[in-house]
Amino acid sequence: MSEHAFLSNKKIIITGASAGIGKTLAMGLANFGANVGLLSRSADRLSELAQEIKNKGGQAAFATGDMQKSVQVHQAINKLVQKLGGIDVLINNAGIMDLNPLPDNYDEIDRTIDTDLKGPLYCTLAVMPYFSKQHSGAIINTSSLLSLEAAANFVQYSVLYTIAKAGLNIFTRTITQRMNKDGVQVNAILPGYVKTELIHDVPQKDIDTFGAIQPEELLPFFAFFAANEDSKITGRLIPVDLFKSAAHFARKQFPGRVPTWEELEPHLKSRYSDPKFAVYGEPLRLFSEGRKVLLWLLGWNQPLMK
Image 1 (cartoon, rainbow, N blue to C red):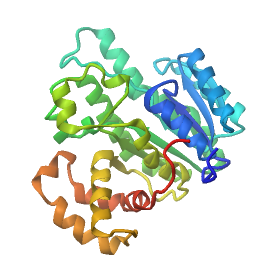
Image 2 (cartoon, rainbow, N blue to C red):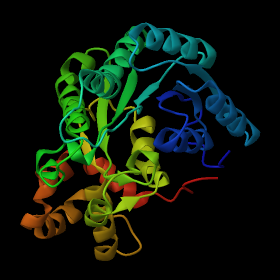
Image 3 (cartoon, one colour):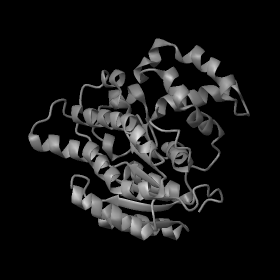
Image 4 (cartoon, rainbow, N blue to C red):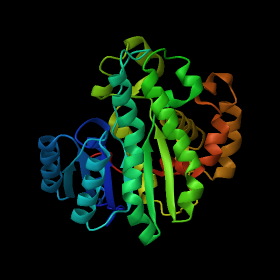
């Protein structure tokens, strides 16, 4: 376990934890002190991952469940809460992506929408009784850059994935008022292409256009919302590539130190008013809403993996 265990005592359930982004988050957040609950369909993979985390001094438990099956999801969440001794954070990460511009059949529609949109809703409903009782909690949704209208215009495939992730964004935005009553924050992380099995069949020209990051590079984003207990920071959509770009830019402007928001904002306005950044929607609004995330990234000095 990292000596910087800033997530100590945090109980975090991660869906889609057996591979890709979910596996990386499980290992990374456990390394920062979290007690992680692993959820996916693969018992063998989850068992191996849980043991690997424990061998490194971390805490982990697992339960199996199919995101397309509401009863399985509810049962798995309850099992994990019991094993962890509670829950502080839910990371809705499980997802699948087909590359068809138009679905071939009804089963394809059901499979993608059930996993990518209904699954997070099932998980949210399952954890809410616990969050309501303790009047605290955080939900972090793994969305996608492709969920943004401007970005989707560049990618003429995977319409179901795009629809589902756009729906997840709307859920993140609109549920906040209801969740605030229970002291729960809901936010979404929007990665671009991440080097996992999910993008194995994505055309190389698209990956070259947007670039692809390692899953470990997502850790600071999820760690921020997992660590932050300010329920006012809610309803945020954080495009990873945009915020990484801004952090890189800010380090050049303020070498060796983290600027205040008042210092940084004029520089961001000067650079990100350029129309080429419109692929992210409204960058300046996103920065303003996510200013604490950006400053967290600038101050991030934790090892990404043990």
